[in-house]
Length: 108
Image (cartoon, rainbow, N blue to C red; front, side, top):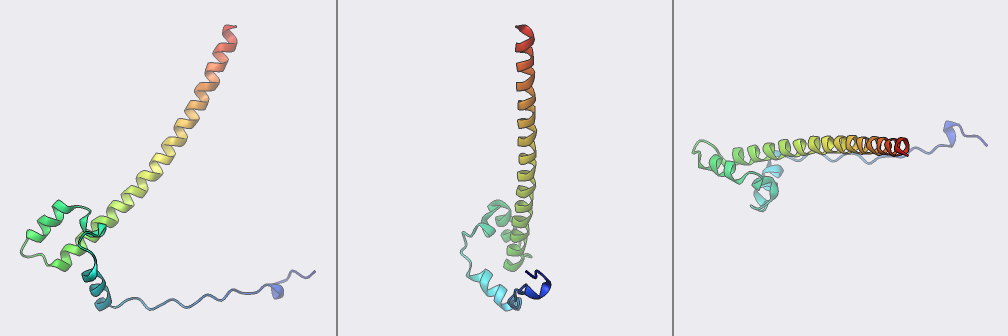
């Protein structure tokens, strides 16, 4: 059998769609439910931002979105930290188990 590159079929990927326009993004944000988690992550700070007369609604939503992204990244970091700590605890538990077995054997 010939396994050369001629026998492999190339997968043709579809072209990427054009990015949305500013108008499309604005329309999407304006149609979003006011209780969407992106806009309610930190309701107290959001209210403070809305109270500021110099801050527009678009700026408020932008800042809320940025805060949501920051929180999401922080959660991902903490998830990794928890996984690492879990692995450390498992290793410590196994080590402790071996030590207990050794002490029991030496006590007999």
